[in-house]
Length: 281
Image 1 (cartoon, rainbow, N blue to C red):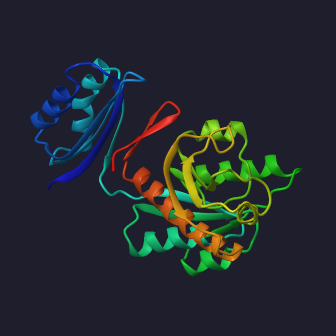
Image 2 (tube, rainbow, N blue to C red):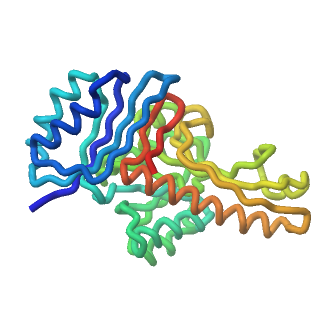
């Protein structure tokens, strides 16, 4: 019986990496079905993603690959293709991103298992219930922020969470929590040219007559909205669009941008390259 594995790695770029990896996999009965690689001349790092069919068990593959990883100073990960990542979704009041993710998980093969929904408001409890997901109401105020993050940490540990998705969660995570969950938290936010912050961004954009609206999905870091970008998308608009039109279009581009970022992360297609990402689509 064969299993399809996905191997991702990054290391200092030098000759022989692809040969060593492919040769080791072949020696242990592996048949490579997909392979992508990229050498970044700016960082000097090499990135690779390989899918391989093999009847070899995980322990044997790990034992075979470990000396190769040590020789090339690799950061690497081996997983089963299609394994669903245990995911916690954080929300506030906007439903569009949550509903989209839950729909894609149930009906479109999104490789995540949403093990819980956390809301700092109770508004989306009924939506979580509709999809059979536990809802945890964790209010956040200036005085309770530390306790609320403590509860989030507890849920991540209790539910064995591998990925946290901020699906229009209108709270800022602390620097410490961002560091602890580095590379495991994905956010979505609107993205305008120029940028509008604060209350009613779509109204501000309408008032300024923007011609492009869009969204950015990125990993969360302690620098607000400045983490490594995974995916971006835009919609063109014109003077005939009302504020309500911009909101509807904005929600649409937000949900699909977040969905692509989550899927690519869950499929091990995103590798960190300093402040940037390498995305093997």
